[in-house]
Length: 75
Ligand SMILES: [Zn+2]
Image (cartoon, rainbow, N blue to C red; front, side, top):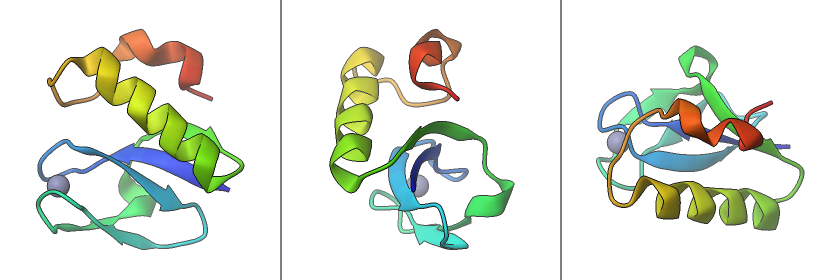
């Protein structure tokens, strides 16, 4: 299981393995505690997770942050 979360430091979207406790943000290198983050989306495979990530980023149009308009991906 993979999850898509927002970095609590810079707001960047990132994919993490659900069983991991922390994930370093690829943008700001902040080590985020995954248990404390709101999960934006869930995926069964890394491929699916990265596809969701791309779709979310494309819809953001460069803007970062948690957006309620992506509800179709949210579990
Ligand atoms: Zn970050």
